[in-house]
Image 1 (cartoon, rainbow, N blue to C red):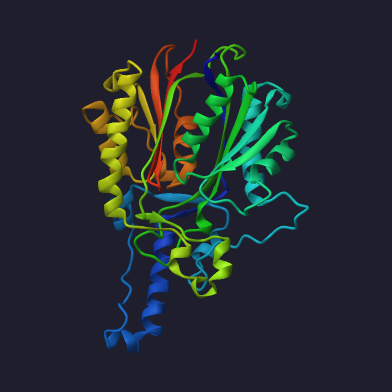
Image 2 (cartoon, one colour):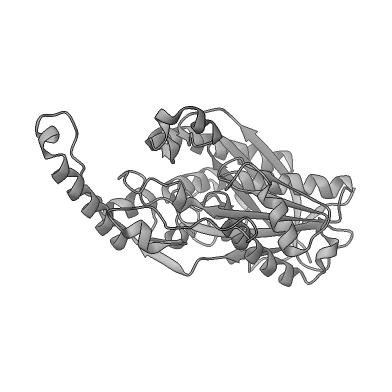
Length: 373
């Protein structure tokens, strides 16, 4: 069986960004308005007053300094606090397909081969714009790719689950090459009125092309092994879906957006992921402490630093444990791929690294890669 190779990657970044200071100003204006409008019930102890957010709080809690978004004005409007992304007619390319296709075109250009060699398109992301038709099929059509396509959703772990699926298709001989895309419009499912999470997410799209080593040119990254794990938890959840129509009393409630119990997530996920990485590395005959670089899911700098320390057995350097969430924030499934795309240089043939993602489910995926000559 051929080994699977990551041959190329691509990235689409929106042209609008929001700093922490801008986000804090909008949230605090909303909080002041809320407290004024509900002054009587707050004074009676029936409703809790909203407290201000701050740049210092955000950076200490997350390491995030700014985030890219599709629509800045809607998010920063204290009377709205939701991005303005109008629906498009069904005969036009959807916004998420447009983002995915842009990232894919960059990957295809770097790959340097015709799309006729791609036999499958996987769209792996946290939130799809509709139940059907699959977004992956829309991207497939936009790029002129034949074969088959389908969507998959494992929340923030979707990209590593997608890489594992792509590698399996290559190793089985089902297709010659697979395109995996990760479009994330996280600003549309974030509650910007929640002080504890209003700063977390940004928008972006990434793309990865996986092919067999029997046809890959020089360079690229051999996938040494991939492993997946899921453990059910309600600590990160989003209850939005088509069944809301059958229970209209729940429409517009906070649980129809992103909700999490952050402290519980930190306590549960850090040891689970660190142990998974170490065990998988050793099963592959790799010394986890000798990994040249970690491209982890970009959720929280404190989680990433602790996972890196547990895996390497020491405090990792910035070059070893890549952090891009200061610029991009949490971009769900795309985060580890952004880190890999932007910071994969400096490897000699034979040196190894790790792409890892983790999130709601709980879910986690590890993909160990080795630089090819």
